[in-house]
Length: 204
Image (cartoon, rainbow, N blue to C red; front, side, top):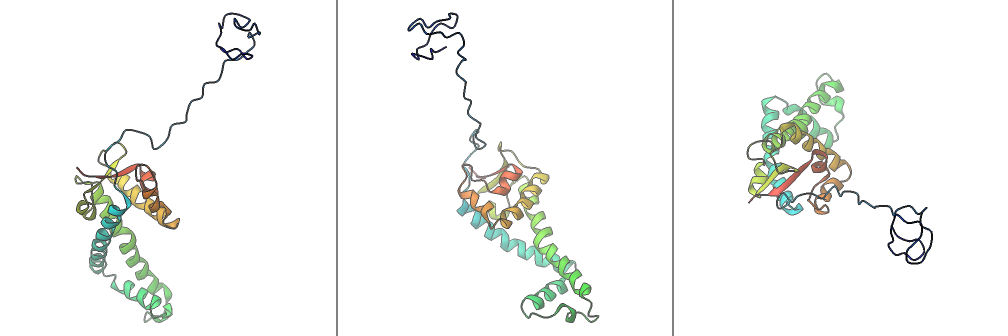
């Protein structure tokens, strides 16, 4: 216990400071300040991959996803949806003129199916499948010697990889700030990495 008058440490069992004689019986002990844990603190798992390497991996993966997406669209006979979308966006054609019946729903259905395959289904299965596999990386990440793990450095499940993939939509919607976080956070985690509890590491 410290004396409130002279500030020296004194015997807590007495009623008066042994140095200056001031009463100390009603003095409360000094509060103990405990620092809040830093969410970025923790054991170092490995070398965290930076934004540059991950962007190059994304370009490689994007090219492959487009190729797989085209194959999937053709396999499910949804080419008309892509053509309708091109006519609307490029030629500004009215949607009622795209089909013989003139019914908008006849064109909207194929467009939604084709876009869903290209933008959601194929990318989801690609990323979640490869990142939860034994290799823990997409082909683009393999090329750049990257690996996706949980925060303890372990292989992630398909469910966690799925959460990470759909978290990228949030990172995109907030004007790509979620991706820029990769270059700003201690463990090089984007928002989608934090949502899923994942790390992207350089392989040894």
